[in-house]
Length: 70
Image 1 (cartoon, rainbow, N blue to C red):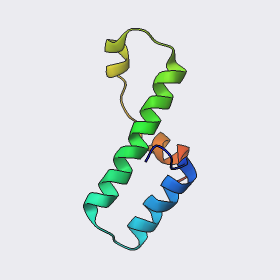
Image 2: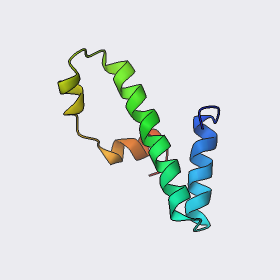
Image 3: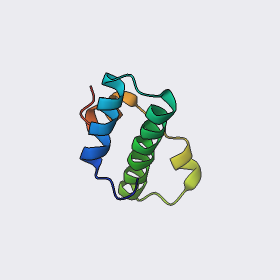
Image 4: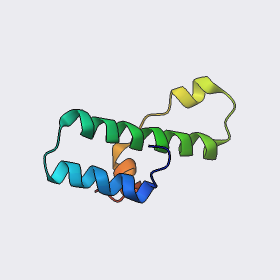
């Protein structure tokens, strides 16, 4: 999945949802999307206190907006 661009990952996710593909596959794609979001959030936060980072709530509206899924 690392070599898949964000755009292709989102296309695969939306197509999988549209065509009602296997839920395990959809969850795999969702997990990769969330992993990428978290990596970007962490790299942009520049926080060194991991306990602060772990306490961040995930706003799925922002997640959807970020990947144009809303």
